[in-house]
Length: 256
Image: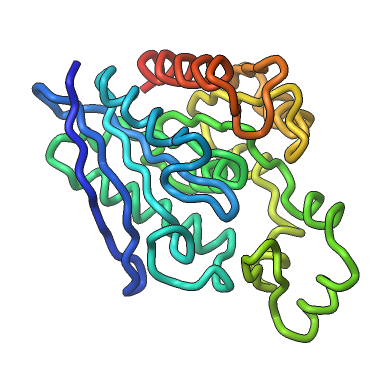
């Protein structure tokens, strides 16, 4: 199946969010998913993972929206203002944008989230009844644990005195850190009744594979767990990427 893609923009709280919409050719309306990038990521992601996935989805009959959260990538806003709440809010507005497109079936919407985007997808699915299917790639189950394990005394001091800390050139604000300590996306999914695909690399050094097992344990038979042997956090080999995309596209074709 052929597809079309176009640059898009939508607004949230007066700030523009930019991205791309990929739409299958042919009679619609089509099912659709929004792709949620990770911490400090963007609508392309490493080795063009999001671009390739969106095109594969559109080629198979599923529309795909990939966009930058406020404060990330090309979108307006400051990264210092980014929090779990702002990204969940952006996700809900992105889903509303998708539902308004004439080529999209508003009753067949899903989410794909990578890393921190997986945590955001879990929160959005738990509170937004329009989400029908959910795919989590290397999802964070507890962001606060990861922050605590890697924080230095200098970073903690900076947050106390400046309200943010420098994380590889990103100004990580105190609000994100505070929300990370109490956020429980696994518990949030208790109110989501749809199917979930959890995919994780067995050699992920950034978000340990144990996070994926937490989701699976909590969701039981509602979730399928796909462990990709040897894969790192962003599935950075041709074979790992191909397996991830093929599994995701096939699963969504069945469950969306």
